[in-house]
Amino acid sequence: MNFFTKKPYYTILLSYLIAIAIGGFILTLPISHQDGEWGNIINSYFMATSALAVTGLSVYADLSAQFSTFGQVTLMILMLLGGLGIITIFSFFTILLGKKIGIMERYLLKQALNLTTMKGSLRFVQRVVLIAFVFIFSGASLYAFVMVPIYGWEEGIFQSLFLAISAFNNAGLDILGSNSLIDFQSNALIQIVTMILIISGGLGFLVWIELFKFKFNLYRISTFAKVVLIMSGILIAIGTLALFLTEYSTNEVLRIDLALFTSVSSRTAGLTIVSIRDLTNASKFVIMILMFIGANPISTGGGIKTTTTFIVFLAIWALITGKKVHAFKRTFSIESILKSMALVVISLVFVLFTVMTIEYIEQFNTTYPEGLKTGTALLFEVVSAFGTVGFSEGVTPFLAEPSKVIIMVVMLLGRIGPISAISVFSDKLSWTEQSEVQYMEATVPIG
Figure (tube, rainbow, N blue to C red):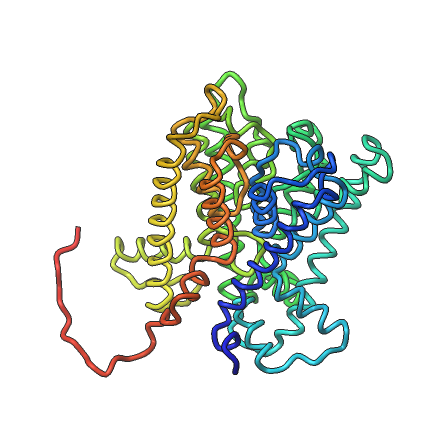
């Protein structure tokens, strides 16, 4: 095996960096902008990173006013590459062209898709792309019933396709104007289709393949799929109720349908149907928890993932009850528990350190409009970037350039995942290897 096959996470990171480099350069070109002028380099690369990392944070209040059709198509391509995975798309077109994919490439594909085996990896890629395009084109077709009467045939279809790609890939970008989906608060079709696309992309391709394989018989699907479905349902329900209650005492009550949409979108999608800045601090805290948890493994979303959260809570419950960590008549390995715990701690430390760094940089920034920068705004921004969500209190366009670069790094690491990011620097993420030296156990007071 060559170096990049032995170190697959280097290849994954490198593929994203190359795509960002190319995408950022294209977005700086005059042809990508409505005014025909060269774009700001930092802003262009920020948008390329945001689209590829399927985050949705934007340095521009209105993408349609900033980017030309060429620039908007570039963003769509980057969202597809980021949501489905660059290596997945590359492998799909390699298969389509009839090229042979060797054992080393299959191993790389297995690592990129976080699969347990190389067997069936090529078929998995084909199914991933098929599932994605079925959802995207179905969603775009339904959106067209609303968009075409508003924008006309050409612009309406383009708007529909852009929004469908963004929603399914949990990308959070739109070309509807500065109000995003706020103008569609009373449109049930837009809300329902968008939520279905977000949930479908966030569930993960492995779950969809299992559901189709077993004809939606929930008793036959794997433990992984059961955890994903249960956690997704619980988080959406709890998020909806919490957002509804935390806004209930305000002058403008957050309707239950808007609370539901925001709860769904908080799980890495970032499409806005209410003004985030106008929500209570309690609501923002709820959203930050949902953003930090994120979507599911092998999906279009980010965050620490629902499976990690599930195992951590199981471990806490097992500690309280004195029982083993188990669910669905299955126990979970000590390696899974340790990885989950470590992932949560590392992610928290990373987010807090990043917030501290950006807070220091932004104290010298005097470009914020009066009343915009609040105590939670930068914390909210970093958590949103890490969870690849895209929700913001409106501070993104006013960030200092060093802060934008840091947010770009956070978005990229959030997309490839903390474990993959750590694996770039260390391949010792397994506790299965036994040391030649065995030590006596020590007991220390805890708590």
